[in-house]
Image (cartoon, rainbow, N blue to C red; front, side):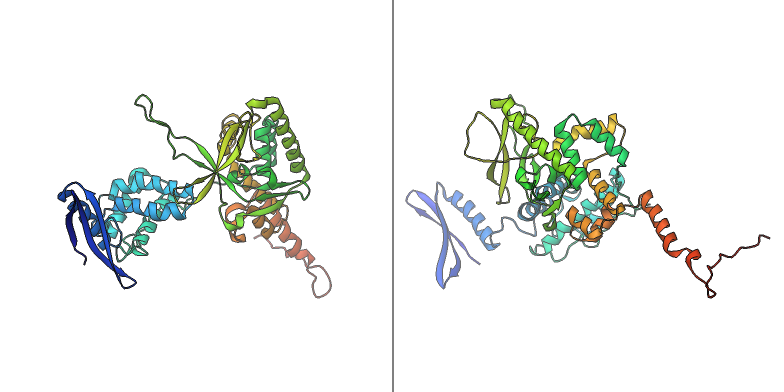
Length: 441
């Protein structure tokens, strides 16, 4: 174990200690410039302690669960997970885990304490089963990371923790819109091109909302009649406005282009003439708006930035037409008449109108459910539907997006009748078999 040495050099103090040899040669770590000997000792002791723990700034035996969770977020979540997932985990940790078990030492916490934590959240908050699963997922994932690769603890105290039993399995509500409802919705927004086009793309392609608003015009191939999905749009609110007059600034919404949900989400799908014609008209509408608004039109450009995880991300930067820039044009499809880009927030207004004014259950994802279900009802092959939706396998498509509608049930009955009716089975004598008549007693 290295020992700390403190000495005076000129009118300043310096600390020094022996480190492990490198290439067989002596290696020392030192730092000078301290005004007093006490200051050199304090900082030297801290540096030596960190060195003896292989660079860790804390002792695994002493760190609290709260501080460890901050470490896990910084060293694992931010680096490996998508921004939206990291933000969801951060909220769960802040609101539920830290207030209940954050004060315990990581090295001493037990499965009983964690199970009690889960039980209290379940009893006091009455959250849905799916949200409770997310809380448990954070607990299991974070404590497992403390075992491997961190080796802070020997085993995970969350490994055998389970959710309280719900009386009934939770069923996620899937909204499938009827042809009549689709027509009503489209008719309601036919005079608002910006919203109408987004709804039409969702219905005719089954794209996720983040994929729709992440489309750029180079993704639309008018000759081949295809749409290519190669990115999504992501909202980040971590930047803050400065305080003014003692009032804390609000979060600034910033939009970025991000990677797709899964590798199979990158796809090229065919589109029909109806949507193709609409997109052609929409593009001409945008060009006309640029001429009409002139210097008041807002163009969108792309700017590279460094994310908290050290990776390069692409920010969508709005700049007025009368301001020159060397940045690359974003060339986004889904912009308002004045060029403004609202990202997926743009669908909040239509969703409220459909829900409250028109009295329909609706969210943008229901267009995806409806698209998949209608294709299956029409006889499309499940693999084709799965690839169109960007799923990794057909099981996901069947279990998540294809639902038993009344038409499917009727088709199943009619299909069985057509292939299994006893009247079509010939008896040995060559006559149609009769279904026996039973005498009522």
